[in-house]
Image 1 (tube, protein in one colour):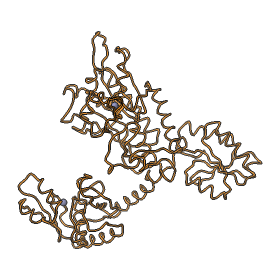
Image 2 (image 1 turned 180 degrees about the vertical axis):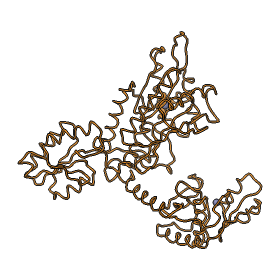
Image 3 (image 1 turned 30 degrees about the horizontal axis):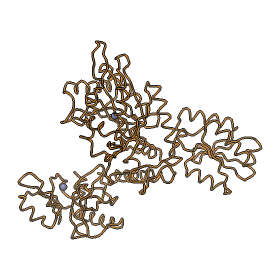
Image 4 (image 1 turned 120 degrees about the vertical axis):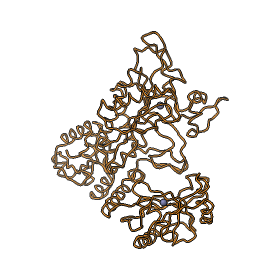
Length: 570
Ligand SMILES: [Zn+2]
Ligand SMILES: [Zn+2]
């Protein structure tokens, strides 16, 4: 209520500075509020302090928020010069609309608000962005001002500090600084190009992911990127999911589409022969790259893209095996989150929506099964009533990064739709055919979004097992190069990712560069080290470890990598 009221006060301030402003909407959001304005000129960051000053005047005046009701006709008169408000009035089904006035500003609003402007204690305007009216790119582009508001100055300051830290850790910024990935307008929005260093992190994660899946009883499969449109018609995707799919392409008079999901390929593999109940469960895992249409306006670095690789798997099992399978996935998901260094997570169980495939009994049974699996593992969870996908109930896990922000991670979905549409069945003990229980699941989400979360969680300073380069060898002078390269070869033999900075630059500059690149270990090699056959280890934090023998350093790093430790101290 306080945050939304602050939006009204910001609108009043903007009106006093730009009397011809056309107003969009101004809701409260997490930690703050925004308001969309149609203004005579583009705003600059310099405008924000002026608007803030005006807002402070309004707050100091302690103007009451006064509610009044009006017929739609009267309201149309009051907002005659406000085209966006007129549009909103037309859409209100009731005969009367409610209006709120504080000071000189009148707004169409359902409320509620604080009783007077003086109740806004601590706020700050933080950002200006473009926003299409109603999020529709065919509508005018408005200017949106974002603000944050808190009950106390202390809480606001704490939040602003976190925001500052978030900007430093922004994966788009670090992606450039650390040379991890890029997105090119020439190639298209939302399409990620992985540079060598980013690709190293991704490969390490993918190798780990594959090994763990094989250990957990999954089979790795590969499926094509395109498939005949008819297949997507059979699955129902073309009917229900077309908005997120790219247009078909024609190959020898057949229409093909690029896959938005990996499920169908796995079903086709399953169906290559008759399956007996004894074979189940079958678990097919694939790092499957899919393409989905997202509006250009919502694309964001690695976290919202058009092409991404899901760490996907589909489990085909009997219904009496479903609970154990879900427990297995939850266990694996928690192990993954934990290994990558995320501590807190929230779990949501989503139930049957209004439109659904399958029977109510099947839904209830499957929802109970998911809930029992969570109970068995003592995982606290919330219920998101009616928020399941149309084809089945699901569990979503949101993990928290170092700044306490939630990231969408693992998801487990039961599917009543595809087994039926493709007759995905097995021969039971009774000799009859039964439809399988099918589970879609990821344990990271997608490689792109997961990498975004990792980059921001660690601020680019990855644990040694994930770091693109693990050791940078820094020779003090050219006469130390031979020894440096010998060490490099020794480390590379052990698959420790190592480079020698052999540029003829000053040592301090090389150290500074390695620190900026957030390389875990630097080995400084001078006369003393060459003579004694030792190494001087420096951490990226600037901390200096004691000189040690090369072999002992090598063994320590190997151990740190193998144990996936986060602490760099040897
Ligand atoms: Zn309001
Ligand atoms: Zn799937």
